[in-house]
Length: 153
Image 1: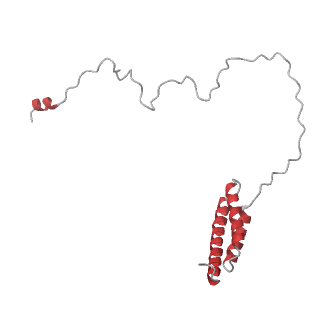
Image 2: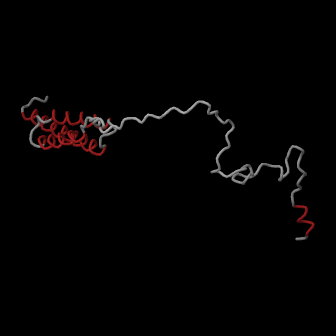
Image 3: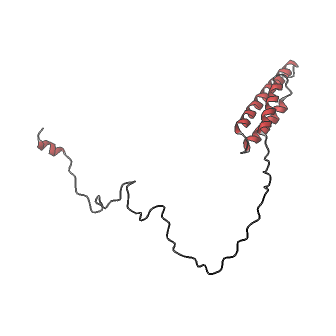
């Protein structure tokens, strides 16, 4: 191809209009230094107002030293108790159906432990899971006993 054909294919670029700023006048790129700092970051700020110290300083009376501290507040703990009760309920529900009240009590205590921020969440979740499993096993025993006694339709 000849140079004349290449020049004819190039687009024509017009001069910028009056509302376009030239490159040195345009805002700097993001992250570029703008030269706005006059002092170091750790240099103290000069005071604009210096307070007057006309009145004499009062003598400082030392506070009495306290040798005791109040006992820490005892927060209720139910996560470990819920886990222990859920384990007992699960073991009993493997053999008898009447252990479901223990499972319900363990589930309630586990939910209370989950709502308290100072309780161990892992222990409370395990307690809730084992309590639900014990309720399920107890319900299975009760349904089986009802079927054996022909109480179910």
